[in-house]
Image (cartoon, rainbow, N blue to C red; front, side):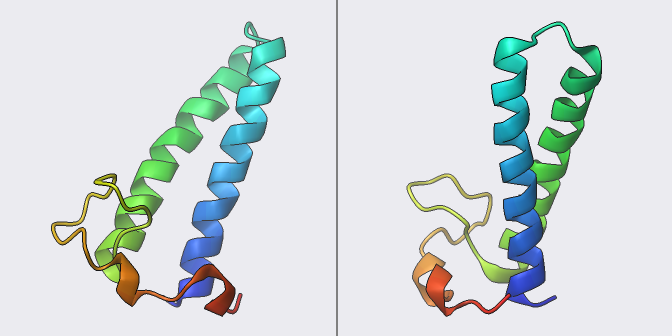
Length: 83
């Protein structure tokens, strides 16, 4: 996989989760939205792990599941990635 498609999918899931969280703040009883939020949360964890296994940490400060958390500086900066 290339950086663009893997990273883009990760960003799409994160965006959807933020939007759902905002929606659920106003509509906490919408079970369909709660279910979708939970499903996307699982997808986010899976996508993040897949990305980190292939490319290295997504975040620094110990929030990575990769064993070598100091490789984040070896990946391209966000403005260097072509989608």
